[in-house]
Each structure stands twice: as structure tokens, then as C-alpha cells.
Length: 202
Ligand code: ADP
Image (cartoon, rainbow, N blue to C red):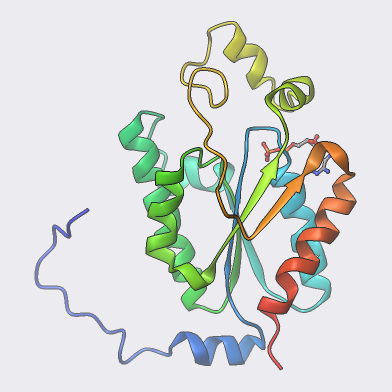
């Protein structure tokens, strides 16, 4: 997307930078990007991971549908264009946190390779840790945590990911968690062990 505003005078070279903020917090910031079907376990894992990181003195911010789609993105729907704009704004918000030294844990279905590519390009490849929270459509439908699968089957929700809209699995994620083969606690532990070395400073 092109910038519409003119007469913008960036102050980035005068404000405290990411490195100062990371030193202040004694941590390294990253964006933990969890992708997977609705009900695959993104939110459950994020909540558990946040608690574990807090115990280790690491400051985090969970970004999910609840705080994004009811706030900054409340004017967006689920058309192709709106889904891309939703992700673009989420990525820009994540980048602000990243530059503030804070770890964001993002829980978004983010169903296509292209949509996640948009996010990765905005955030930067090295700071974008993609986690594929993998559970089959069947398992997610059996869980039906929010009753969305039932509504989608009844035709009350259109373009539902996995049913009448595609989900494209990541080709080369930082980590894959198969949530139907383990407990939520095990999933959390696996994620924490994988990301912790990236978040701590010597
Ligand atoms: P999402 O955020 O991806 O839509 P939720 O976290 O809201 O998914 O729901 C996942 C459901 O699956 C929860 O009820 C959770 O208790 C259950 N679950 C079972 N096993 C796991 C696991 N290994 N990891 C995460 N969640 C799990």
C-alpha cells in the first residue's frame, strides 16, 4: 500500500531506538506469529506461553482477534481485501511493539501463504517466528470452542477457513505444534523451549 499523506517528517533518528529499549527490558523482542485453523489452539498456547515468559521476566503482549478486530480493525470484514488489510495493520502494530523491545504473541488464523508473507515483509524475516499450530479440520470441528464450525456448517458463516475458504499450511515454519497429539501444557512447553533462546540476552 502506498503512503497517502505528504509532509511527513520522521523522527526515528531522534527517538530512543529498539536496542536501548531491549537493554532497558533486558530481553530481545520478536514477533511470535501463530497460524492455524480456528480451534487449533493458538489462544490457549499464547496464554500459557505468556505466563511462562512472565515468570522469566519477559514482557509480552498477546495480539488476537479480540483486541484487534474490536479495536483498530473494527471497520474490517472478511473479504479478500479486508483480510489483507487486517494482517497489514496487525503487522504494523507488532512492529511498534518490536521496536519497543516487547515480544508480541500473535494469534491469527492468517490462512494463506501470501497473507503471512505480507506480515513477514513488514516485520522483517529475522524477527518473525512463524509457528504452525496444527490440528486437523476434523479435530477443530469436534472441539468447536466458539461454536463457529456449527454455524459455518449451517451456512450462517461464509468463507470459513477450512470449509469454504482455503488454509495453506506454512512450508517452512520456525516450529510446528501438532495439538491433537499432546496436552496444552506440552504445547506451551515446546513453544517456550523453542523461542526462549531468541528472547534472552547474555
Ligand atoms: P484458537 O485460538 O486456535 O482458535 P483455542 O485456543 O481458542 O484455539 O482453542 C483450542 C482448544 O483446544 C481449547 O479448548 C484447548 O483446551 C484445546 N486443546 C487440546 N489440546 C491442546 C493443545 N495441545 N494445545 C492447545 N490447545 C489444546
